[in-house]
Length: 310
Image (tube, rainbow, N blue to C red; front, side, top):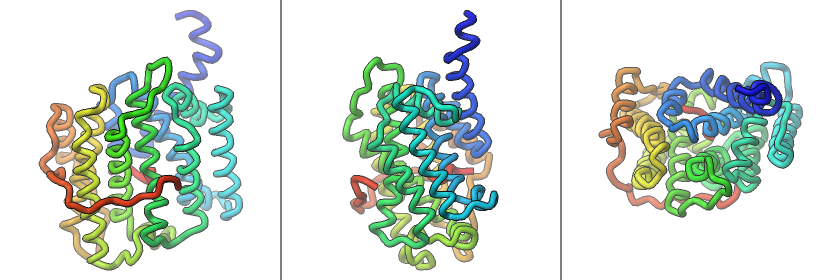
């Protein structure tokens, strides 16, 4: 290895990617498992996306408040993070290692303001809005989760290319719907904590069994639509996406069997291992929805995955 590779920008780039991997691994063993199924071409890029998402999430979801920051201070820090992210993409460098890692990915894979700005808009919503109706829910989910799926799709299609290209529209729809399903599953899983600790109601009429059934039906439809296009993904991305899909399908099935008082369901480790083995072999888990429920999902065209399964 040359001295230039051990020092300077090459070393800084590598250190930034390592820092991003450390952030996301610390927050989710399941996500770490899924990332290990990604090919090396895309793995570091996806970790960099989720590291930035996690840092932004932590500004609005408790740690910043625990440090003594009020809402105005949280907004200031979040705005500064967005500004630094866009500046780093433009100049190719950031003193923030997580931002630097994300900027490397964004520059190579064609992630731009059309996806980054809606994400930060949804994060700001968490500071200012506690309750959601269907319209604000859809706008929030687009920015917090669907665009994260679109960022990952940009990586799957463009990592290693000299010039990014636009993904196939069917893959775009699948990425959005998978992100939406992930977010709605997490909303149902975290109802008690969101209400008690954060004072938020993302789903509206959260205690209604009818509303819960509607959300679960939408999740099933979104998961089924996403599953249909997984075979069209690049080969080095399919198994990891299938694993993530099947883990959330299993969570949705367990949420459907849950009853009041609702607890935070999880996938037991032996079941998780079985799902991982099926994903590795290329087979879809039996817990995955087999067909679309018929509901047409309506989302806004402009507006994170708040969590990954534990």
